[in-house]
Image (tube, rainbow, N blue to C red; front, side, top):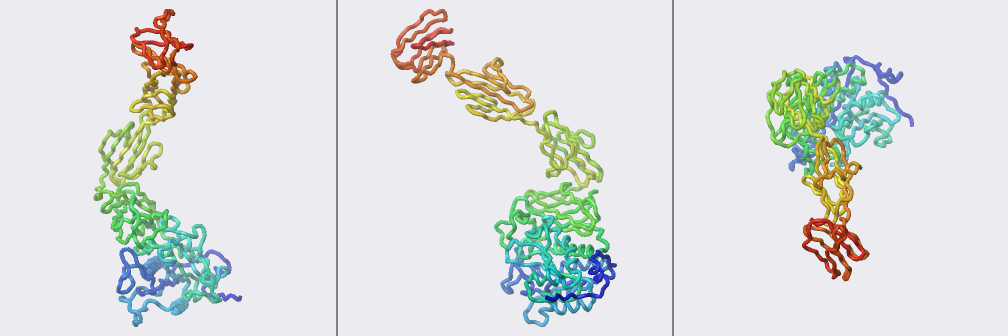
Amino acid sequence: MKQIIFMKSRLFVILNIMFSLAFSMEAQQTRVYINPGHGSWGPNDRPMATIPYPMLSSTGRPDTCGFYESNTNLWKCEELAKRLQQAGYQIKMSRYANGPFPYVAGAADAEKYNKKLSVICAEVDAWDSDLFLSVHSNAASEGSTANYPLFLYRGYDSQELVPGSKAMAQAMWPYLVEAMKQGLENQTAYKTSTNIRGDINFYNSSSTTGYLGVLKHSTTGFLSEGYFHTYQPARHRALNRDWCRQEGLRYFRGIVAYCGTDADTKGYILGVVKDKTRTMDGYSLYKYASGTHDAYLPVNGAQVRLRTEEGELVQVYDVDKNYNGVFSFFDLKPGTYYLDFKAPGYATQQGITNKIQVQANATTYPIIYMTPGISSDWEKVDGSVKVDVQGYGKVTLNGEVMGATANTKVEVGSKAVFTFEPEEGAYLESLTLNGENVMDMIVDNVLTIDKVSCNLNLVAVFKKYTYELSILCGSHGKLILPDTIYTAGLKSYTVEYDDSVRIAIQPDEGYEVKSVKWNGTNVMDDIVDNSYTIRNIKSNQKFQVTFTVATGIEMNAHKLLQVVGGKGHIKITGAKCGVPLSVMDTSGKVLYETLTDGTDSQLTPCATGVYVVSVGPNTFKVKVR
């Protein structure tokens, strides 16, 4: 199949094809034709329902504040055109407005801004354009979570029909996908590749001159489908004009990179603020991709404040109530900034935790979560410092030791160095600054704030190291620790650094202690008052006790025979009937003789002392108290 190559006379395109080299054009010589796709508020302009702007029963479309691709495309292209003009490029757009309203099908002006594609192509060539860009958003089935860009140039995947078009698309792709790469916009495909196609192959067309009518001209360029407006969270974000402006800004960066003209010296912020706990489950028109921030409720009406590192207020942004949580700041001097947030029903965030680094010719994409709570107004920044020290340690600020609760001041814009000194055997367990966890900001037990730009409320909690005391208690007894009783089995007991623990040892009736081991060492001789104390614990410990039948208790072949001395008596259980029973003193003198009757018996009274008791062939030595 013969392929038709459309050549332009302009020198920069010829050089691009002949030498495949990067080229730089003077901005004032570069003419860029921009086509914001669609152009009215009619049924062909992708009208789609959103939470704040549902379909109207009268038209089957939302009002003009709702989602129309015509609106969003124009907002993107207005920003692109403005930026290119400021950079010295010459600009022409296929339209500069939407309309008319109300849209009446068949009326003379119904498609006033929906130019025919053939007319657009004629304008592109007649104006002798250098570059062309048509801006759109894509569609799948409604409620689908599919979301990724698509660039289409005129021609085949393997061969462009307008020289330079594929190279232009490849140069601009990394800039468009910035927000997706940073996780602000969900991307479901082409995360490590590009989605740049020739329109003939993409649409499986039999044409040899191109498929898309808007590309049937001889100017280097392509059509961009920036995202899928059928992904409902993305559609709600597109209701925010600044969100769309930022997409236009990314196109601008891509064109500048392709042309090799001077890059932007300013930086930008585009973010979202979400509820930390509540999700969008149960909301219609908001099917989200799992595992993304889209799962969480946007904070409608939040106020976002941007401050410099020195504490100077730059701008306040009011988040809309269109369920997107979008905030944006433009044309910032590169450097360090802080973001503050407040909203009704949410705890105000003000401090240094939301630290933002802004770089030239780049956008920073923060995702911020707010915690439901009591909203408070912004504090007056005067360098006030509150320090709350809890537990086993101390805090110094710029070398001065702070009390358990301290109030002081530092100069706004100055350095604040907090040093945390745990006591022996303790550590800094938690640190919050203005209600936010800042443990990850500590280096070698020091928190450094290079420039104080807000009042500081610091809470430091020190805790002692803890260790595991493994308790192995044998059968037929118990171990008693403070507030805890352990019976047979292996248990764990937690102790703090330098603690001492007294362990009471209590055999069951008829049993006595067989062995006591501490960390593997026999400590039977150290038992005092039936207890053992482990002192000054500074590591994990092991304590093991076993029990055995008390002296005077043995097992016969049929049942347990027990002879136990008690207080003023000797108790005999388990003896068979007719067995000779005798009690002797330690000299061997017989004090008592009889035959057992097969029942348990108790010999009383018995004076205090040690006796020898014979039951049949079994002899026991018992002690009477």
